[in-house]
Amino acid sequence: MTGLLPIARNGGSDVLFLDLNPATHGQLHAFVHAIAWPGYLGDHVFTKVADDFDAYLDSLFVDPDTAKDAWADVAGSDPSDPWRRTVEEWLDKELPAWRAEAWAAPLT
Image (cartoon, rainbow, N blue to C red):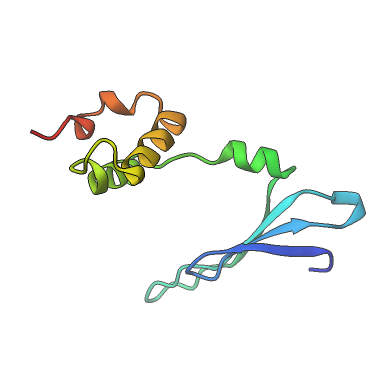
């Protein structure tokens, strides 16, 4: 793991690394822990996830359930509320058609 800089970790201790080695500089790699089930022993995974940071960011997406939950948290607040405006701007950018979703209907 020489030359790999850990840059992110999730609650399951999976790690995202930025590669600083000269031959592969800028690549992103991930170490993902296996999920344990009774009677099943999974394998941990170490893999390249992107050629560079821009490619990694371009590969990210907003999960529809996450968008729905984020909107549900602010939908009833005043339209001028700063957090509501932030959520609206995020959804407008990342899910341009979100306002047509049934869950985005105005509260009455």
